[in-house]
Image (spheres, rainbow, N blue to C red):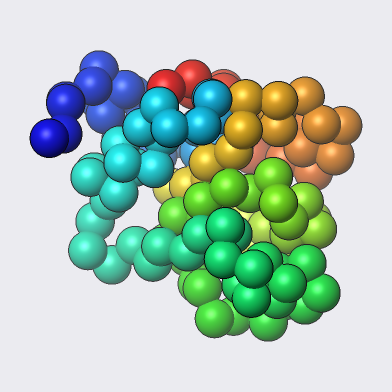
Amino acid sequence: MYIERHLENVVNKMSLAFPIILVTGPRQVGKTTLLRKISAENRAYVTLDNPLIRELAKTDPELFLQRYQAPVLIDEIQYAPELLPYIKMRVDEKKQKGAFWLTGSQMFHMMKNVSESLADRKSTRLNS
């Protein structure tokens, strides 16, 4: 059973202002469920829990982003931080609001490369 959350409106509003939405929090609290529930039909979904997809994201981020084009929800982004500079390049090229919805563990936002790679391109961290 899905429980409606107040973050639904927050995510939708932030998607109109920022190209990247990052939702972090502990595992199994509903980050992915929330974002999938409010995703438009044209938003691709990919999880980096899948070892084959994760390997592609880590070894060939450019090909990964060609296969999973914006708008896209990338689940468990902490497993492939190599994607971040490529996401940044896509955002800088296309300037598309709400293009990338990302989920990650609650410690992910503390990683140095997240702050550096996504500075001024993502919304304030949303904890689910």
